[in-house]
Image (cartoon, rainbow, N blue to C red; front, side, top):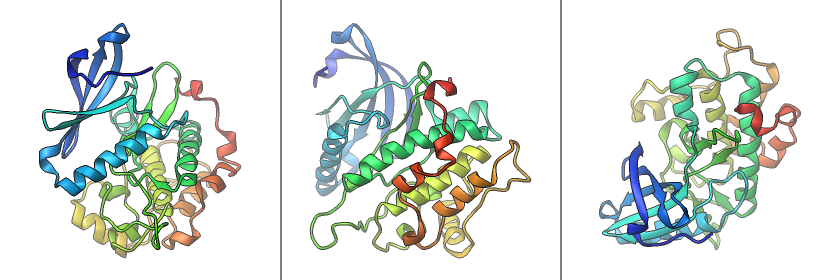
Length: 283
């Protein structure tokens, strides 16, 4: 299906998300019998030219990445100094919203494992293509109400790894601080293992209802992540019953030394992840 680059073909509905330099609007696409889509609108006035070039490259990467567990990009275009990124509309919304409105004390383990299995398949695909997502968190995992499909979306800051000497490492301060790996905070070079840390924090977010340190301002969060032992799953104090295996999986993702964290492929082979049910079980 090809989608138009003419803004007039889209009828805008309510805003469904607001970020620092972008917002997401639900819309209908008239040429496809009013198909429902989500449009991320990025205000380019807030960026330098070099950043805009980088952003356009990243949107190209997003458009080329086609995988069942990655939110597809249907089209992107610039209109009136704004970049528009068209994706499917996922009706149940992002996991952080689902937690907030329905599961403030966290999701049961079977749901967490079923979501993780899907996200890990999307991550494994990206990492094999030498792409770091760089912003894995509950707010970027979208669930479809009809199918239970969980898709990793918004590589808003994700980026193809630089070619050349530092081919496998990135040096730029991006991503949401609560989910950010210590090596990223320290501005050290980093690779796909930073995504594994973020996945560990996201798993804690799903088990607790919110990410660790979410009550603190960003600078304080950085201090705590860099100076405290990594957060872990409190099985005794949790609302749901969680297995030792889930705690161990989180601890493995949150190893301080990135080299000791498992790859996405290794996690997919984990016996707990192998117990994941079909996506429809989430509905």
